Image (cartoon, rainbow, N blue to C red; front, top):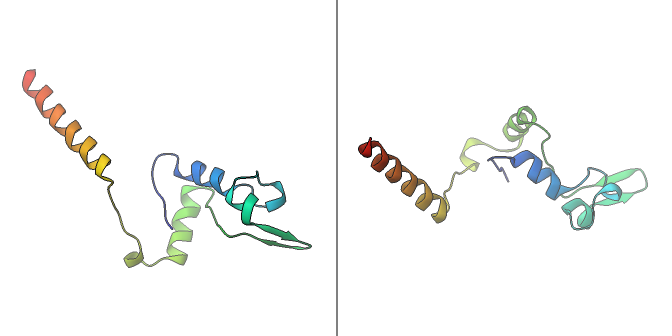
Length: 93
């Protein structure tokens, strides 16, 4: 899954938890589902640590035709409404 947006990296990394499952908070993905077995760590999620890493890693694991953009209905409404409000305010000046 590729996620983008404001604070995407920090939010996803918080949800994922610490890289080492034994250090991850309960309720995080790694805290609940990761395993630390002797000298091996098994994680069920990867979360990039920077925009540069994300770009490199996305290109490694995904082809362009596997990445889709979408808008939630609320986003469409807000942005449409915001644009109409700007147009209205411009006319008032």
